[in-house]
Image (cartoon, rainbow, N blue to C red):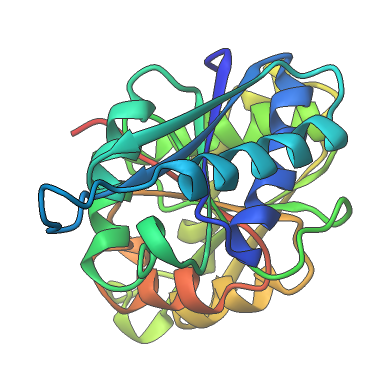
Length: 269
């Protein structure tokens, strides 16, 4: 994991919740925290320059909150000109994690509505954590597993995060019997899940892992699992039960309705 956590802020309640989570993530990692506000210059007469004071205040107040939450973490502040997604994508190139709230105002308004969320998750160079619901310090980390090679980075992130949080992992693979090849039973799904996790427990012997092969719609399975989780980890690419995870209804359901923070980990192209 990188030694920098970036959090996008805009002064909203949601972004302040993201700051609290990001401060905790930076503290666990022994990382620096960078608090970023993005804005686009409005069309204004030349004689009426934009007053930057409110923008600086938004960032400074968020940074002060982070310092109270994690006094040992080094916190930097930045106001950056540009589109919110473009700014955060650029920040992700040097970060180990980008954290954002699920709702916002100002520079990050609508950030997780429609194509903007898909764009950020698809192009970020590091994992993106979306703070939803009431972040809890208890419950398992739910890991969505589809068996694809692209999902390996999500698995690696989930195990590393579980070790940092001293949390257990519930690895979930969803399958629909009616859509499975003729003669295929739950044993095949169980085998796929076990193979995807192979070798991880040796590297993280203290992380408890429960494997859950669930029969049902992927979206409903994950949303149900999120109700008792402290974090959900999903890949940005996949096949099988998680096909098109960030391209359609499943992604919208998770980003809008999950009951816990969701981390999207981009795999290899």
